Image (cartoon, rainbow, N blue to C red; front, side, top):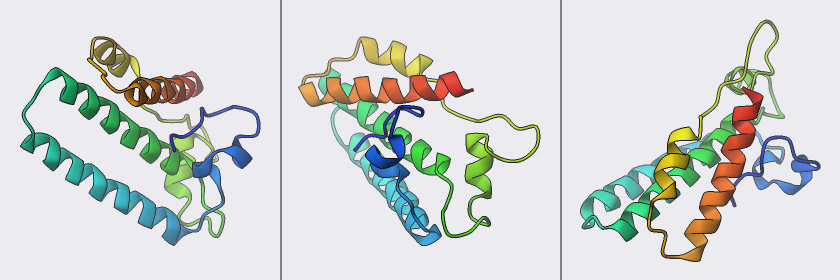
Length: 139
């Protein structure tokens, strides 16, 4: 599932990616998402380019980026050592720090004119924009 926006009510209980997780779980999830992204890129380069496939490529790649962003934003529950990158990325670290994030501006402009044939791709685009807009408001 696509992550919920950053600050909705009851996000901790409703968002799959905000559940408590240990270091090895988070590491495995991020590693497997990286491998999925690599395989997806390889498949995309093997297919003939068309407007339909371009739309699917862009939306699915943005969905992978949204899940990776949500995973990196989530601090660990079992130790503080593995949470240091997450606390800095999300802006929760001690000291004068601000959160990092991905700006959806270019994705919004590019995906407006894409041919998204499947209704699932349109719904996915809307969920991704909701998530990244909420991240942008936190920056």
